[in-house]
Length: 299
Image 1 (cartoon, rainbow, N blue to C red):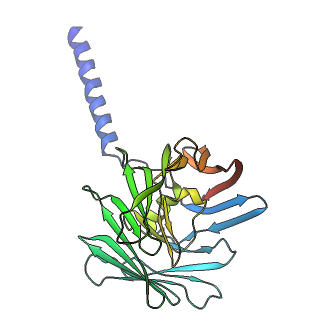
Image 2: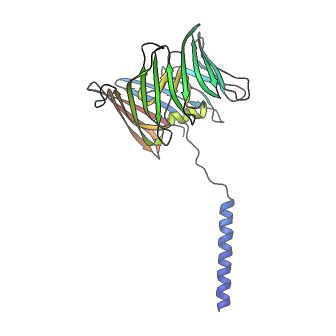
Image 3: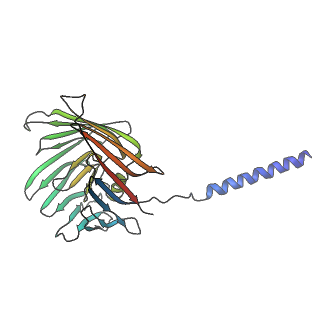
């Protein structure tokens, strides 16, 4: 009787091992990621929508911009975005890359405007803007772990300094100014950021399509305004966007650190941890305004 029981236990044990082995060998089932299909911004009676179309490999290839114009995106043989063209416009945005193996972005051309990117230790250290002569330079510095530490706009004589948390999220931006390049920069205002736990689909879209470190060179304008941590849009759109969705932004004048200049909150609607829409509420000088941003995704 005991032998029979032991034999039964041994058979069950072997069947359990075989079952586990079979499960371990099988390929995991992955849920396909739904790509961003559209962004709609609504403020008052004004509504603007930008759409995105993809080819079968997932490359962004076309869409409609916020001015209801069709656009198309072309690529180099190495899979880098080479141009962004809008219907009925004589010239689009052209992206030129280094012939070296790193294929770094060297130049952005828009009509007669040109942006040159200068590198130091494989990181962008300077932007030079031409129209067609040199009009402005923007300098970039980095901290010890390679994150952007400062951005200096020499034309406007302003400097932005960045503070990060342990998750590498920008939690404070100091704005400094000077009356002359020979004089030291002094703090004039600062902004403090809080974040949600869910991620920003617009950041993810550009990281997949145009990955240039912290900087994003977007041929389309990104709204709302306070969803952008940094923006330079005089010649083309250069942004820093947050990986995680912003919960609040409070911007203070250095002379009044109790009452914010801008008090901004963002409230989100999610489905399966994916952002479907959010409302940006801004209080400025006692006046409250709101803007609704909504997303759709491919089926």
